[in-house]
Amino acid sequence: MNEAVIVQAVRTPFGRRGGWWSDRRPDDLMADVILGVLGRAGLPASQVEDVLVGCVSQAGEQGANIGRLAALLAGLPETVPGVALNRMCGSSQQAVHMGAQAIAAGDMRYVVAGGVESMSRVPMFLDVTLGQREFTGFESLNPGLLQRYPLIHQIESAERIAEQWGLTRAELDAWSMQSHARAWAAAAEGRHTELLPGPAGTPARDEGIRERADPAKVAALAPALRAPGQGNVTAAQASQIADGAAAVLLADRAAAVSDGLTPLARFRARVALGSDPVLQLTGVIPATERALARAGLRLQDMDWIEINEAFASVVLAWQQTLGADPARVNPWGGAIAHGHPLGATGAGLMAKMLAGLRATGGQFGLQVMCIGHGMATATIVERL
View (cartoon, rainbow, N blue to C red):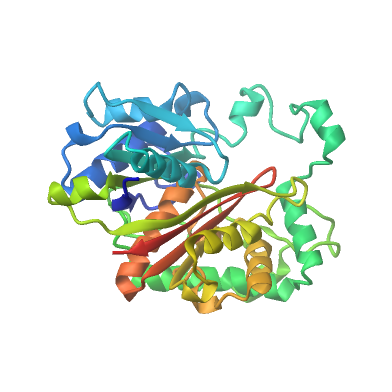
């Protein structure tokens, strides 16, 4: 099989809902990162053979196959196809996997894989409600599915994880505040080399991060879903709703070297699996175990770990179960601080992780994400 490698990876700064990117269409955002990743790599657009774009709420400005539309907006040749795919929060990580698989199979030499989500312009669940009403529960799902699985809100799943793993409110709040502290430090020191410029006049960082999270205010927040005194999961412990886009340029290693490009990393494992659809956020544990087994590596071998901070309880339960070194987990903060633009986050975390590995001289990186309805994706890369 051919060897798939990552040649370049970029992302926009992630903006708050109603913030920096709220006046920019998502298809334009995705076109921006396509041009950005090709420009940084120095690859002519004519060499690209496919564009794979993860996007969760595929409606409105994100409908009608945003992958193809973004490729056309970016000025790629008309012969370059595009596709939009939805594995919920793992969508653009899945896009990277599929692009790498197409290259490994010998079907393509160069693929742009990435994702986009404008949660300002295309409200979450718009594809479910069709804009007719707000999403209030699971009324649009098949009744037969609900009879088989008593599906619950992700916030309630996060609460149950905290209970099952014995996580305290203080522990959950501490992780959340640490996420902001790490993210602010990384931004202040200019470490995010994966970032493309934000809107004019904005600093070179993600919009949602805070220089200092006030411990008293964090501790005073009421539970997000349960009644006061009956829950521990608050808004401060959850990923921020955000806008953004990211792109990863994948290549056949031999072709890239022949064309004068320098690969950044190669793949050691790619995993997607299902887990309990009620608890739904714990698939990161078996996904990590499977990825490590496929790569023939140990968690201790990972120099950099990106686990998406959907909720603090997810990260802490994963960490407690697997015994990860906290210093190597989200060293530059996570989605609690920088936000989670659903379809963009997977490729965005990959770009961020590669920048971190380069900055620290690390060799191996693990990226793992929990996904709604009980799924998870995991990737292990080796820096070259």
